[in-house]
Length: 136
Image (cartoon, rainbow, N blue to C red):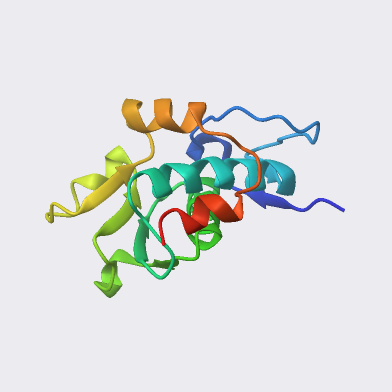
């Protein structure tokens, strides 16, 4: 049985989906969550994130926050709140939230055009052990 992650429909960055499960009022099926997280995990790996990193997640749209946390976990990193101040130079946020962080850390801005382009060309297939080993 597929579960759904729910967010207000007006609080969702639209992304392509491949499953036949319906998205209603900002709900996301497990299969889509997995695919989206695989894509985002590959973007993180491409930016140099690796297992054991503490990655700040400062994302307001609920679905995107869930996807970001899943992607961080998929690479063996640890999602943390930016308030914890314990991130290791990486963070995930949106344009609306980026101005809150004065540091010049390595922030991945989800709704930035270059991020979206990298995301859309990334594979949504499950991560291979060789992809994770390549950054270790």
